[in-house]
Length: 133
Image (tube, rainbow, N blue to C red):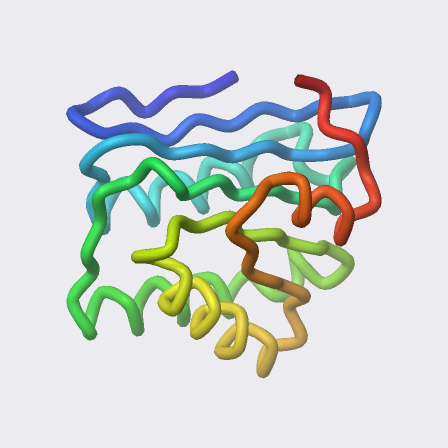
């Protein structure tokens, strides 16, 4: 598990039995942490073995500017070769759901499979995996 500890943080781990990467965030996270997390996951030596991702953003406090949102989406689209076989489930709170849904739409133009949910259980069903709790 990797933790980028600051007032808010991201962490991720690879659940080998499910071939699932679980990513979560909590607290006040920022733009640079978001970019760093994406790069850390993609560059992790375990990454090539996984193609299902649950990104749990329900506990974050992040309000990207329009420019940050565009850069984050473009950064993710730039990873399309690495994510070509991936399915990414974003789990958002009600406040962030629209932003997550818009992200899913934007990255779909780069042929990245992403869907937004409000409940982890629904994300798991979509990914067809049982997350090790």
